[in-house]
Image (cartoon, rainbow, N blue to C red; front, top):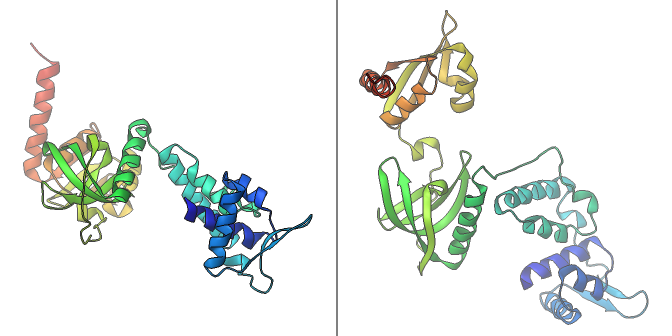
Length: 302
């Protein structure tokens, strides 16, 4: 895009005293005529650029009108690069890193970024997830609705959505938008969406900021208490934090936390095998017993 290219040209001129038109044309993969038009546009925008002909000629910002080269510090540039690389890990391209390279010409020591911070937002489902992210991003920019089939604990449904934001939270990707079915703003997990495609255009609404807290998405209907064996302490810390349990005199862990539905509680307790015992809610203990009886009948048929 022209604006991206002009920003890139200005960045180069801030970091180098003088550059040539052929250099800029090669760098941005356009013609010298296009570069000339960009230079004219920058001058019209109030940036006093000087073009000198001859052997040592080139394009530069007028002396005495230098913008501070340290507008972005080394640490700032490295942090930006780390973030751009994380976006590349999702899209499967290098376009964000290439953009950063253009903006940091003349400061090659920054290109490596902070090698001690590596961010990878991709997942095992990258092959199916990346196209969804790209399609939704395009839909947001072009103000197109999207239609899709959605799978949730409540069942399967067809949805039409006005998408407004892509969100990475809780190690998953979500889209925030106006759901025609619910007639309200909703958050949808991308991995649960299938048959995703563009629909008709829409007029933007006033968009509320989504509540991205855990409790803003999942209400705690059931308060769970359970005794967990000490070898599973790492799981409790990883999934719910060290404040979710207390250590008992016998070394076992008394776990306390809120869950949204019964099926989540049953599945979670069962995942520990014989390393957990559910204390509360008492009604879910009955569901666990029925679940175990169903398993017994399936594998111990007479």
